[in-house]
Length: 207
Ligand code: 3NM
Image (cartoon, rainbow, N blue to C red; front, side, top):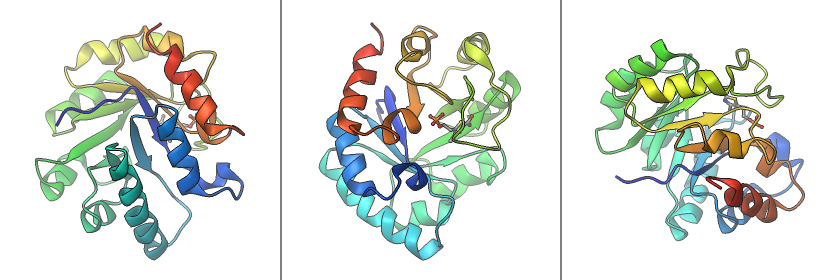
């Protein structure tokens, strides 16, 4: 499957401060988001399942793939396009085995060893980070910086998406690193005008 990783939105309901997540994601897609990951850490399995089903119906309308964070069961239950696992989630090879070979599997890494391991064990893409300081993921490791991002990109042949603290002031630098895309939460969902924010970020990629 050919996937456009350029502007990869990760959701976080907390940052929306009560705004509707489906309206927010639709606005982001209209602004140029090319991939969506549903990442909800604070809700029940039942709520996650219903949210994921509805999100799949929305993203499908725009032909944007939907990735589920961490929850293999939910990814399978709603027939999502893929799953993203982190270092503390199911092992990436186990996730691949259970998910099947045709789905997109992402793996979070912050160094070369993890990157090479992820590629060898069935990941389709890597989420590398955090690149910059971020207030959104409180248990994130220290920022790895652009030079380490470049080293990770050079160490694997699968796509690498940068994450962590990316916004309007630094997305251009990320796009020059060799990464295939930028993954963002607050620089999109934390803004008053989500569509405008997405258009601005998309426009800076690669320029
Ligand atoms: N994962 P923001 S950093 C969900 O380094 C997540 O793996 C990270 O949010 C990692 O774009 C992060 O607001 C938070 O900084 C990204």
